[in-house]
Length: 255
Image 1 (spheres, one colour):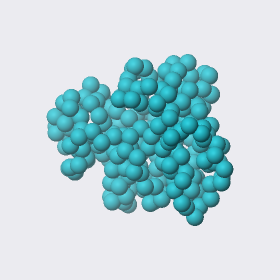
Image 2: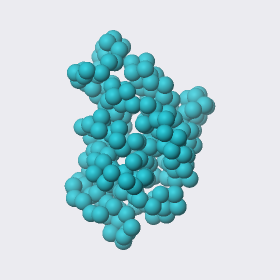
Image 3: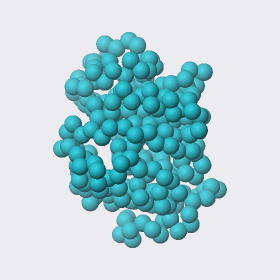
């Protein structure tokens, strides 16, 4: 059984792709790139690569769908651990050994990066709306699910692949963490965090469409969370969790 697979979702990251792959290869030789319908030349760059696996979406299908594909790939190929990181150079490949070391310690199923281990107030470089939404959602998830995380949205993570049989991602976009954390809590997966450096190279970067409005984005996250909490399960989550939400919340493959 191979040990570690590194998965990198990509959407129009041609300006960063070569550098990210070059640095990532220093720490993990097994790399999967999910090209989520890029239109900027990313596909041409990937065509030159011969030592990685690529999943290509014919059109943009969303961050959650890209991660769901990575989860399925890692399970099919019998990897022990899956590490995910972004391709915009806001995740430093030099931190990959931290996740590997935490995985080898063998006392967690989910190893989640945190950019806020010293508190949200200290993270002055983060765009205020992202910092505030992250803080609100993280606190709500902790209270509802009994978690003890400090960064609900960090995409730099390591997953024990055998634990992913409990995770069934159907939310295709950026609200995917709402579904993920509920399912992880229901399955009793063990979670620990690894501090990483907070980097925002482009604080004006868009989510796209209506989600660029922070109020609408928060509303969307709460609606997805409410829906996931309503899914029947034999596992136990606090019965009053849903009542704590605000009342107005309403490919191709090459390897």
